[in-house]
Length: 187
Image (cartoon, rainbow, N blue to C red; front, side, top):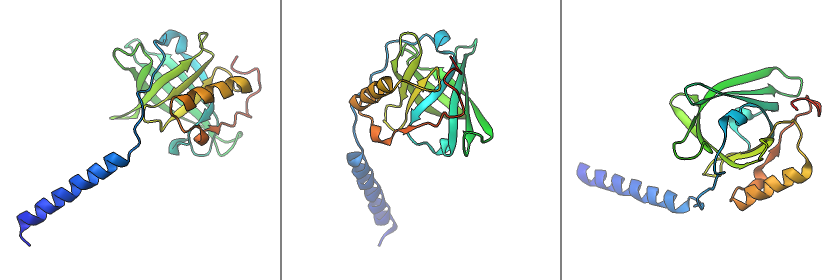
């Protein structure tokens, strides 16, 4: 077989594979976020109530994040967890979140490892900034966060329902162990 023929067959096979993958991928309706987020009010500690499994959070307990608005307009992100159990060693990761222009700060691009950035979209936010539902437009990431380590079950159930209505496979949600905190911490 001629070299040029092999090249065209290979190119054709790649195009066919790309078309197959594209047709098999799930399509989602556009994901709506809240209208706007006041980053000054969003600052502070947020406890992770539940999440979709993520490789980097494997074995994590007592997860929380600290957000601090930087004078240059981005948000400094510090994620912490106890590895292996509630009494495990606390480990942390530092990153930055950059608001997406025109989103009212409801869409951010989070970067822990340059040059890679992930979507952090605020889908539901309490008017008093006490709890939040955060996800990604591909529906592969989802978090329920609260200013306190525990969340009322009825409120949790409502946030899960909101996520379901937005097309998230909520059966993947894992409740985060926050047993190393008492009900009064973080309030």
